[in-house]
Length: 68
Image 1 (cartoon, rainbow, N blue to C red):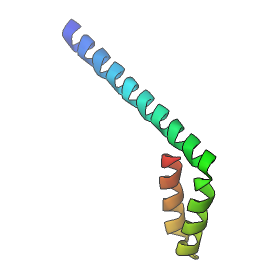
Image 2 (cartoon, rainbow, N blue to C red; image 1 turned 90 degrees about the horizontal axis):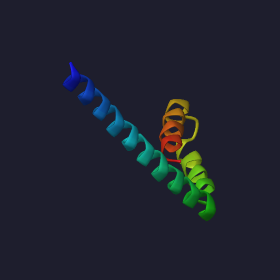
Image 3 (tube, rainbow, N blue to C red; image 1 turned 45 degrees about the vertical axis):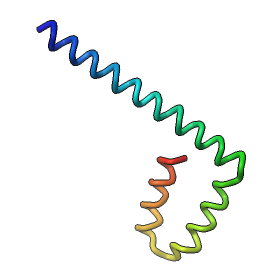
């Protein structure tokens, strides 16, 4: 029972560390995008290519939100 508990705890700590690293990397990427004005450029280029396709727009907003 102790080994199972220890394994679950260790896996949880590893997962939290990975999530923390991803959040730090995403925050750095977002800061660079904001400082360089890349967000506005990205939005303008995507809005012209999407047109009136609302499902595609929603999908791309989710993807961009995950990146930024």
